[in-house]
Each structure stands twice: as structure tokens, then as C-alpha cells.
Length: 515
Image 1: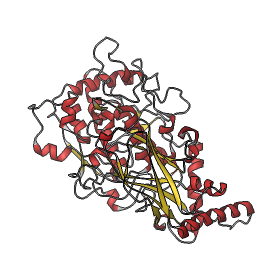
Image 2: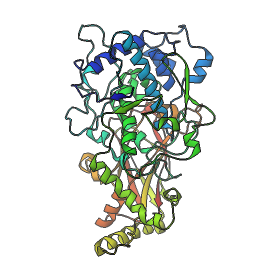
Image 3: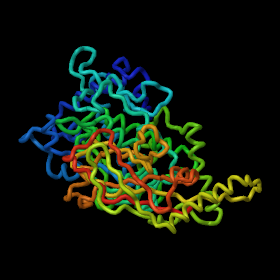
């Protein structure tokens, strides 16, 4: 049987939809299982990550309770892949595993044998309710007044109800990224992330992981004076039932990306076969250990995955917009240079010192190498000259402008849950919401706390983000307001940041990448 995953809003988002009613029943049954049970709710959440102090604080762990064997903990727990090119395929196997466990409990209770995990398409502009937390997750009780297993108290969002995701946080620019894998230091990280080994708390997110994945996590979880919401921290996120619908949608967006011409998964054996040092593994319904590779996650219609989405094709608008970067590569490829052979990024300049983010924001100046900066602006002028000439010759190859890339390096924090908007050359006194043309991107602090701990594989280096600011810099140059020797960068948090959040940025740099 091939299962069909449907939208959480297909039938109103509440318990009148049998998909959600039975999801609640299945989740409720899994929550009754002990932590030591590989097929239980808490065991599966710990596969993503576990912090016993946070779990105890929120009532999900009791000191002294029976734990899984140490062998099972070492094999399964703290396995989630973040800031890595394995992020998407690892999570596909993870959602598939919990889907099977929930379905088995549903069938035991007399529910439908074809039940499949729904997805939360918060980016659906045709649905005015799409960005709202579906009602089945917001009410405390089921229709029979029993406790609702889909409700958790630790969804703080922005502190107001109903919980609604900001429109800017669920846009899908990631689908326009033509490459799956980033090309290296200083350059864009690609749709799926940079080439890495096993990465439980890595450095640079891929475009899909950064936006909307990380930001939606934080927008749902948020924080209050008791600490982060469940969705805000990787070590608690899997405990929230909405987590799985969020990741089903991220998985669906991978399918959408793949359905766009020119968008291909890696063919590198290191991606196809997965990391050598720790294999991916999930529990099956019968408690067996299922080891898998990214290659085995590519075709969801094949066993053992056996599922499709009711909406998994790129819209005509997305396909048309995504085709533009591919078209710009055509001239390069015609000359015999593969897309993977793109030239490395070149450092243009950086700020002078570590930045601390406290209160309502921080500003810094990035000193640029004037000669390299002039190369960038000259490429913009050449592009405009070419566009103005309107060539009609069939063999004409457009001159492409350099890409300008803003790197926010080694972000560290004592806790997750912040959302920070990054602006370029924001005028003094200007309201950020009035100058969205200068918005470089947004950073969701999901996983920053863990990546900042010195005992992690990357030694507490934090995370880094890369934004393509070509459009912003090109517009500033065309307006005559771009200085060749510096850019000013503003980091503006959505909510004021306290000093004990410990947010620092080691360096902010600008790179150029010749096309």
C-alpha cells in the first residue's frame, strides 16, 4: 500500500477530521509507554535529542525511572542531523518511523489502516488560516472531554493566542536555490546544506533548514520566564506532536524542490551512503532496528517508505522563478564548466570585533577591500549595460553579476528561541518594517545553545548563517548610495534580548563569488 499524506487543513484542522482525531488517539497510546520502550513517544523524541534537565523541568523525565539499555541509548539517541547535507534525508527516515508507530496504535484501536502523517503547510497563500496553529493542537481536551494528547503547554510563540506564524517566516525562497549542496567557505550553503560527516550540532544550515525550518521551530516554541518552549530546542522538540507535521511539510518541500527542472539530489557517494562514523537507524513497529542511507530515502513510493503527498509538485510560479538561476548557469555550462565547479568565494571584508547582542539590537560596520568591492560594482554595471542592449542573437550569453554573500559567523548563545532579523545599510532612525528592501534574512535560534557547548563535536563554535545580499547591494549601487569601503549591518531581535541569553557573533564578513 502507498499511503497518502494530506494537509492538516484538508478538513478544517480540528477533530472533525478523522486524520487528526486518530492522530491524537495514536499519540496518546505512545505516550503511555515507558521511556525504555523503543516504540514509545519519549524514546522517539530522544532519538532527536534529550536534555534530562529540561525533560525533568517539563515533566517528561523522572529521575530513577527505568532507562533503555546503554547500548540502545548509544545507538538511537541524540542522532538528529542539523547544519549538514544529511538534514533532509535523516529527518525523512525519522518521520517515517514515527508514522508507522502511530499507525500501529491507531489500528489496534480500530482506526483506519491507511492512516498517514498529515503535514502543516503554513506557506499556503490560498488558505487564510494556514499560518495558524491548527485547532486540534490548541484545545486542551478531545470531543469527549478527555485530555488531548496533541496539546502541550510549552508552545509560547510570541506570547499571544491564537498562535499565528509571521508571514515573512514561511516564505519559500529556499525552493529557488538550484544547488542541493553548498560550494564551500563563505559561499551559499545550498538547498540541502554543506558537505559534512555525521553532524548532530553543526555549523552552517542549508537554505531549507534555515528558512522556514529553524524559524518555524522558534515561532511555535518561543520562550517565557520558565525557559524555552518544546519546539525551540532540539533536545525537547520531538516531544511536541506538532513537530512531526512541521517535518512532514519540510519533507514535502524536498519533493517540491525535486519536482523543479534542474534541481537534483547529490550523486556523491558520501551523501548516498551516509556518514561512515555513525549509521542512521530507526526503530520499526516490531521493535527491530532499521538502518538506512540517504540514497534509500530518495524514492518515497518504494518500500519501506511507501508514501506520497497529496500536493508535492512545484507550482508554476515556483518552477518559473527557480528556472532563472539555472538559466543563468547555461552560458557557463556551455563552456564546459559544471555547476559544481563554481569558483570559490573570496573575502571582501569583515568587521573588527566580536559582537554582543543585547536589548533591541546591535550594529556593526564591515570594512571592505576597495579594489574587490569595485570589482563587484563593475559586474553590476556590466549586467545593466547588457540588459539595456537587448541582444537578439541566439548565441548571446548574458554577463552575470557577482554574488555578494553576507556571513554571520559563529553565533553563540546560552539558550535558543531568539529570532533575529539582519539588515544591510539600514538608515539611522528608520523603522525596520518600513525597509524590508534592506532585509538580508532572518536567523532562528534553533540549536544554537547546543552548538555553543564546548563538549559538542565542533567545540562550541556555534552556528553560522550565509545570506545572499546581491539584490540589496546592487540596488544600493544603482541608487548611488553604496560606499565601496564599508557596509553597515544591523542585527535586530524580534523581542528584546537579556544579557543572560549570552548571544554573541564572532565575526560578520562579506564575500564575493564570481559567476
